[in-house]
Image (tube, rainbow, N blue to C red; front, side, top):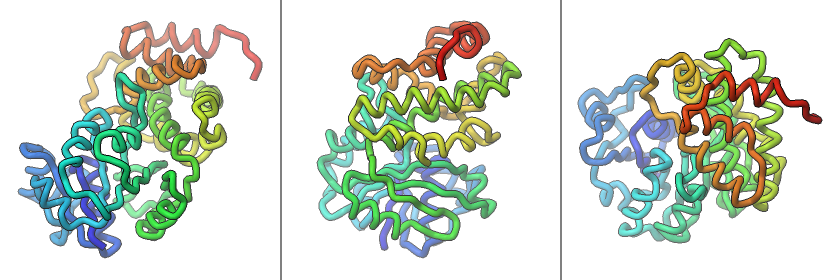
Length: 317
């Protein structure tokens, strides 16, 4: 099996390492001038892992795509449309695509599978989401994840190809719900970090219950299965996103309320606005997502917004 991974950051380099560990031929692509790619070329290591010599490294997109049977994509959600547009110029027939990102497009609220179809075309496309951190996987700590697509046969094929002792996959039958849930859990991660920064971690129980509830209502109004939110793509990912020291979204929220700068990518910052776009479109109330957006984008007082959200209103459970 020939696998090309597009994107050489934390998750892209992990997916290349993981595919190689399963015995596949792997090429890892990064854009021209990528500091991540330059470091891997020089040392074959980054702050997370060491790539085996069998993984080929390139900044030539045409060469990376030419021989691939399966293309795994792991880039920032907001950079994905431009990459998908570049891919439309490549011969894509016969290839299968797996999107390993969690986000929604800013400005449109579109799911990443929708973006890919619009720019690259209608090709077999699955998403790979769910809990797990590179740091834990590299220590040999296993986890459960989910692969979802609009085609059950494709889902089952990708699960078979990527299953190993480190990751047990579940079949996702609701692509829409899996993508919305995976993206929106990062917004809940920001909120969790804010609570940690304010020493209100005990409110994470309320955050989990109410967060899953508001997202399930949104997915239902969009035509997906509301119960998907209670699976691995969203609620099942809360431990890794709301509690883990490795969660960039949780850490961003915590550092924000402490007045510190956090430089690593936290997709929830963009997703908060994108998911509110969907809430307005489908007339779904998203009070937690709105509170997070007001804090991050409008610089509202975190303590005031979160206390208003969790402690000042009386609501039926």
